[in-house]
Length: 337
Ligand SMILES: [Zn+2]
Image (cartoon, rainbow, N blue to C red; front, side):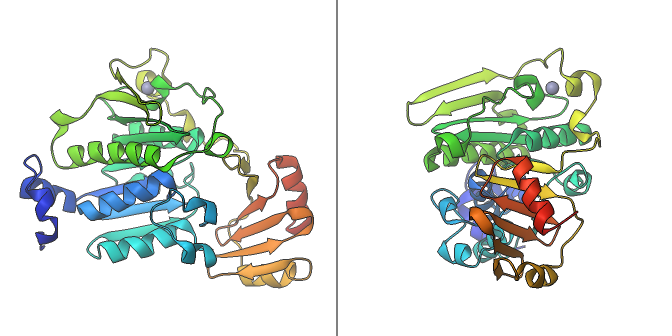
């Protein structure tokens, strides 16, 4: 393989040609193609990893462009799913990389498949339930997990290695997420870029055989107020089920609630069906709603400012409410069970 395009990276002493070849042979899973995920993917693809697996459940909207580096107004116009839009851009950046882009949810049903070939998993999500799922799956299979989260001008990141460091559950308890989201207090792009760059840096160290250089702290920073803080990752929490008992709560297939409120954006996701024929739904809903269909999704404008977005994988986004009960009412009225 011609590595000339990576010459500046190979001049960097800790990487050299040997590290570059390790990168070329690696597979990385990125979950989420939002603010963190787009920066992460851009850097990894430019750096020359072998294969990128990217999964995201959403499509591109105008308010994403302020910070989600791979998207543009054309993507908004065509209502492209983020995974597909990201793949389009990334293939133009580096055609040597194998890119598998999946539009859907990372869940207990598909996580084993998603993760099985990954050398590192990077967190580009915006919610703790998916993060715990990734954490538990990574610790079950012994795969490093590069965690990152950003809100407002603050961010947090750590590189967890099963058997060597504590895990995400050791440092944040389930349900103690603080409750602030990008949609209630906002977010600025530089904070995202800082955290995602740190996530990628540790990943590059790990994949190029520079494990002795890994940071081994939980780093928190606030780029606006100029606070930086490193907390050493030492011993696991004595109550952590993952680290102490090798139990993985997020991987237990309990009957999961089929409604998910999406990051406070006035959207509830309902996933009851295994798939949807968009053409059929276009003719059904066309009687009662304004319809726009693309190869990937169907958008229907209903009464009272409620919009449905139907995806082929069976998910429906009910936009215009954050009330799961109301969302279910509209779903039952127009889609049925
Ligand atoms: Zn733990």
